[in-house]
Image (cartoon, rainbow, N blue to C red):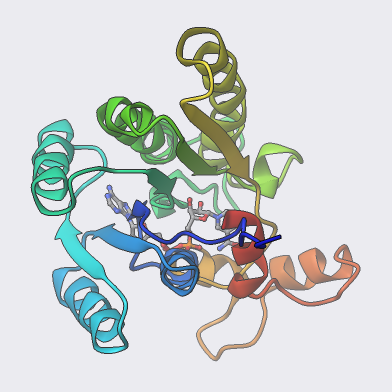
Length: 246
Ligand code: NAD
């Protein structure tokens, strides 16, 4: 009997939003290693183009497109470009997201003086920055008959973490939205799109650097408290998420 590699992404065309980020760039590499073609969406054109070029030099197929996930017209334009170049879109990883500094309650801040505008920004980026790409790319994914969406939630959606309320509410909303979308898709689109979410624990990245590390690189009290409650006593390594993602 010929064994088929069920984790192969050969001939799959997959968009990764936030693909230039710390976790996103590992997602991109994992997809390329599994044989997929990756379209990296990000805000930093220089970084994204360098990343895509390095993948192509190593024999993979990748394209960078500067796309803000909160701008529907940019998402639409990108979709047209991808369909023109590759003919289809099979998968979407919603990696763009993170904390918005002004939405974080400072250690000495008053709980009754939350920065509502900052919190709205965090919720908008994490929740709408996930829903909008799904709305724009969903119909193309469904057309393949076997589309897959992976949303990126967070452990913050499950436990009350101090200070990061807007971010956590955005992620909790992603959890609900993912379940809702899965049910609606099963009802209305049968098996043509699957949707799942990964809820990572704690990883050192740009968005949480100031929460977890001091300017001299040492851990903050918050980081020490997280590690005390983590059985492995260390932060996650981004590659540890990649098996589940693929
Ligand atoms: P990161 O800051 O390194 O990456 C986030 C990426 O999103 C960046 O490249 C950024 O440019 C991009 N981005 C931000 N706003 C955007 C927009 N409007 N349009 C397009 N791109 C935009 O952070 P990361 O840790 O790699 O985070 C990736 C995802 O994982 C986020 O959703 C984050 O909330 C989630 N997450 C991270 C951790 C962690 O500990 N780092 C834990 C749980 C969940």
